[in-house]
Length: 82
Image (cartoon, rainbow, N blue to C red):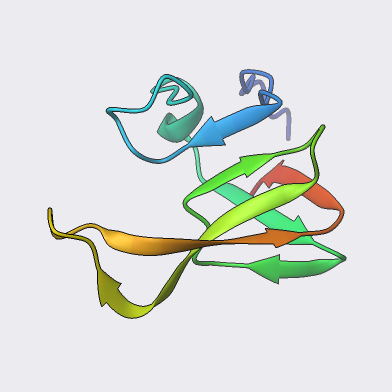
């Protein structure tokens, strides 16, 4: 079978928050996965390939606006389409 679906290129930095300047609606029309140090991570909120980090929620703690507090985890970042 021919799969003619074309995916937009994955950017160097991407965020799931629509208020962020790094948000891209075209990319999120498809399911995106993230590998950090060859292990797939499911809770990623933002990533940067060139700087080698991802942001993940840090437990149940929230800021005063109700958003979860983020923790930066460093390593080899590999985004992919599922």
